[in-house]
Image 1 (cartoon, chains in turn green, red):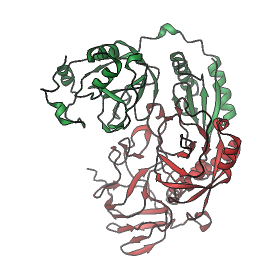
Image 2 (cartoon, rainbow over the protein chains, first blue to last red):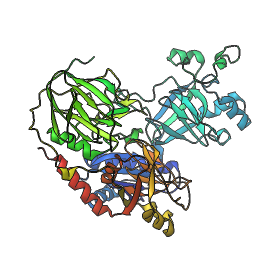
Image 3 (cartoon, rainbow over the protein chains, first blue to last red):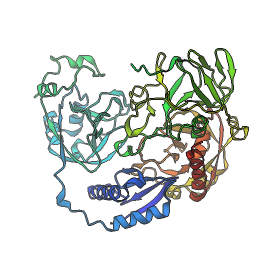
Image 4 (cartoon, helix red, strand yellow):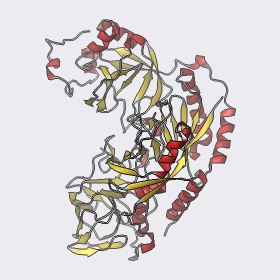
Length: 248
Length: 314
């Protein structure tokens, strides 16, 4: 496994595994993160995977950079090459109600792609996505990559409030907002699942390296799964059934 | 409702947050680290009372706090130069203060500094949240007294430890008390991305003053000064380090602080040392800052000395 490290702070080093975003790297980094957690567990305060790198934070009172790097080298050299056929066993299925009531940019994404709304939903939910990184907010998973027709630039003016569970597209990435927050992604639907729950053993539903598939659900299934429709911050008239009824 | 005796706040202040040493093992979930912004004042507040390093204290930004004690205990107040009165009587900061049940404590707005720390004998008895920390995260809506990220509010009741042994009425010697009005030199550990900054740009950065702007909070400190030119603007997002000096396209540096996002893609010149950030946490907008390069070795020596000093029980 090829890697290099950079000192990034008083008690952090960043391991770099490549210079371009590539799903093979995400798996390699996941494998490295797992091995380092196993072998160096207590010595590492944080192990933070991202697209091409892994940030490690160590304990200054019990460790030093030279011995840490030596242990990291030992651990990573002992790793076998990634078995690419091991994937697929960890696909997390996320139900999504794709609709303009909960995804106010669905129509503009369709218009930009030259596809119908139904085709956008079909294409977006047909693909298995990879979690490239977690960041921005608790449990916020950057998923890639969307079919090229669906790529859409971020909104010029971000919305001040996007409800938890909302699904968006920005450029070739797609992501769900785990908590209500401001956001500039193109919103196309919403899941009834709780993506982040501090009271769970694993508060974040998704983590880097996982695979995700979206399953389009109807309005009635969304409501059955306790999906919410009463906290939508955008134009209230859009909630009117006569304007935007159940498409499914 | 918690009926353990404690402090009932009649005035919560502008921004008062429970803070400890911060979270551990959470960044991979996108959770911020948090923790006291000025660890020097925070650690002294605890040390005076014999509390272990890492004990939660109240970080009081811009003062303006009033509370009533429901128990006999001891407190200490360090950091920003607020006026402390108990039942109208003036008390010194950076010292152990005895409190009786019913005592009315007021803390004014600071004359210098930004953040005062209020610690109590035995620590505040608050259930830790994610990452085994009591720190409060307003942006995330996590942690703190009610685990919902809310700052202290009027009417809040902070339960206090009751079985700790009282400590002698000691105080911190003048030698250890910083003057927060001083101009500030920040030590920088150069990072590998420093190669993206032309030599002339680095000379400017390390010789010209930068000003702390009001766009500064627990996430980051925005500075204003000569614009820094970066070669190749965007990077692939990677995990962020405390104190990282990130340079967005406008060339005005932003220092990443305790509540920073966990990953980011701006080029980073290096990282300001935690000891420098402690001092920065007490500076008001408009303060002139000077950067000085240091080595990882020197910075780690200084940090280890700090941690060792405060890790020893007294």
